[in-house]
Structures are given as structure tokens and as C-alpha cells.
Amino acid sequence: MDYDRFVATRLKTIPPSGIRRFFDIIATMPDVISLGIGEPDFITPHEIVEAGIRSLRDGHTGYTSNSGLFELREALSDYLARRYGVQYDPEREILITVGVSEALHLTATALLNPGDEVIIPEPCFVSYAPTVALAGGRPVHVPTRAEDAFQVDAEQVARAVTPRTKAVLIGYPNNPTGAVMSRERLAELVGLAKAHNLLIWSDEIYDRLVYGVEHVCVPTLPGARERTILLGGFSKDFAMTGWRLGYACGPAPLIAGLRKVHQYIVMSAPTTAQYAALEALKVADEVVEHMRLAYDRRRQVIVRGLNEIGLPTFEPRGAFYVFPNIESTGLSSEEFSERLLLEERVAVIPGSVFGPSGEGFVRCSYATSLTELEEALDRIERFVARVRRERRARPEE
Image 1 (tube, helix red, strand yellow):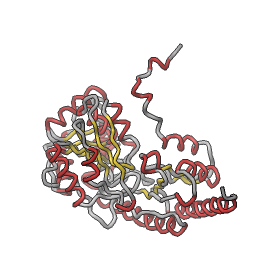
Image 2 (cartoon, helix red, strand yellow):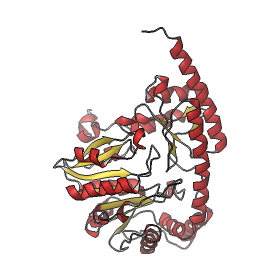
Image 3 (cartoon, one colour):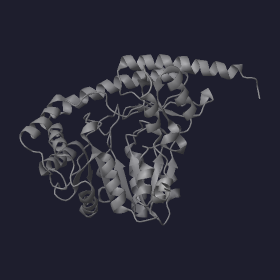
Image 4 (cartoon, one colour):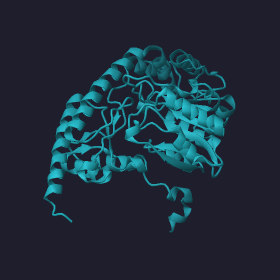
């Protein structure tokens, strides 16, 4: 039977996740130090876990409102107002989702017509372009560079705008580079969006994980709130990846569209996770700061170590990733990652899976212990030295 004819044509143009392939290899190997996974190595703080357990014991095991627990939406509205000075109506402008992944899927599905274009600065999170494509849109990549601290340039975005452009999708603090956009650069992007009547989809899942700089919440900028979908969640800041809880905030007419899709595909986000998130917004500031400081120490160790090895590494200011340049080894990002894994049991992710301008880089997560980071650096140094000796030993072509 020809099953291929039953698979949607649009799926055939989307490659499998490059990250998943490396995790499949890792699962078959012992003694691997993984710098690949984009997940906190901390467990969910005790108070948050207890709130989830308490909700089960209290019998909160049914659906919530499609939009999510009203108490959670109220608390989230207060949290965003207190932290960033942006206010959202909890009744009409906030939607609780199954992680930020669902929030992005809802945004694309609800707001794109077939052929609409979304400009995506890259390197970027691997799901951005596929999510746009699966919704019938057309992703348009705009490269960023280490020389510009991987911040998107509004003039370059402007050159990519066409009559079909509907939105710009950004993710800062950035996965995979760790870049943080400055207020000035973001203001320029908002000005461009106003000039061309575009939406901004702003994925701010790493907003609390910044080091020595401020995180600028996009809808707080003049003229931005009315055209921004703010995407956020609890996975990274609060070490709640497995709870699968995110949110989308924005103008009521747009959130109504997202809610309509949401109610038909998932009904509501997990109830237990919502009660846990409600507790997180109340009590977790001190724990989040403890994790942030730990990441900062690791960040400094891995950046210094990679630069000493001779892999030029831009200093990340957010999230928990570094993005070293591996071009000096003469290997592609795919070759470097695969050989490092097979020969030294260190897992990193090829930069090429994050977009065309990611070639020549690899992504390393420092969401792991300092002991493992130091051992990983020793193994990387050994590998890079060996590769360079191999290059010198080759006869000139």
C-alpha cells in the first residue's frame, strides 16, 4: 500500500528535527556529557510541586476554562504589570496554553492565511519556520551575525518585507545564541512594524535568565502593545519543562482567534500545572534568582574555556546557551557535532539546524553541573587538538 500518498504534501517539505537525531544517538551511548538539551538541570522548586500535588488532593482534576484558570490569568496579569509595566486584561487578553510551543502554533494557525509571510531572524529555535509552514505561511529568514551580537537589524528586516509579509517572529533572549536585544534595536524593529503595519510575535520564554543586561519586554515599547503577541511560559525560568505550561498575551481580537483554535485542539491546558504555575508566580522569585546565579557562573566558565581552546565564542547575555564558532577546525557543524559525540562522548547541536547562518557554529547548553562542564571542556579541547593535528598532517591539495 502506498502510504506516502496519504501524507500531507506540506509535511514533505519540512525536515525532521536535527536536534532529535542527536538525542536518538545519545540514547544508545554510555558516558555521554550532554550539552545538547535545552532544559534546566534543576528540579521544579518544592513549593511549586507541592501546590500541584495539593490541587490533585483537593479534587481539581477536571478541565478549566478554555482560557485557563481565571486566578492564574489574574496573577499573570499582575506579574507582568509588576515586572515590566505592561497590563493585560485577564478576561480577554491572556490565554494559558500547553507550553510556548502551543502558543506559537495557535498564533500561526489563527493569524496566517495561505501564503502569508513571516520574517524570522536566525539562527533561531528549530520550530519557528516549521510552525509557520504548517500553518500555510511562508517563513522568510533574515540572518544575524556574531559581529552584531546576533541582534537583528531593522534595516535588514525592512529589505525582506513584501506585500505578503504579515509578521516578524523574534525570540530574545535567544535560543541558540544567548543573545539579548537592546532597547534601541527593539525600538527600531517596532518602528519598522508600525511603518509596514506588521505584527510582532515575541517569544520571551527566557525572560528571567539574563546576565548583566536588562530584558526588554517588547509590548512595553511605545506603539508595540497593539501589534504584539507576547509568548511566554514557565518551563525555563521556573524549571517546569515537564509541566507543559505557557501563555499568549495580546490584543483581545487576536487572542480570541488563538482561543478558538485552542478550544478545538486541546480544550484547556493541564489543570494541575496551572495550579503549580499560580504558586510559582507567588513564591518563586528567590528560587529563580538562585538558578539564574548558578547559570551565570557556568556561563562564565564555558565561555572562557571555549575561547581558550581556540573556538571564538560570543558572550551570551541570556538563556543558557553558548554558540562557539568551530570554523577553525575545518569541519562543518554537523561533522563537528557527530565526531565530538562519537569520539569524546560530548553532545552538542549543529548550528545549521537553527538556520542557514548557524553553519560554522555549534550550540552548547550550560544547563548542567560545573563538574560536567569542566570535564566536557577537557574532552572538547582534546578533540579540537586532534582535529587540528589531522589537518596539518594532510598533504596540501
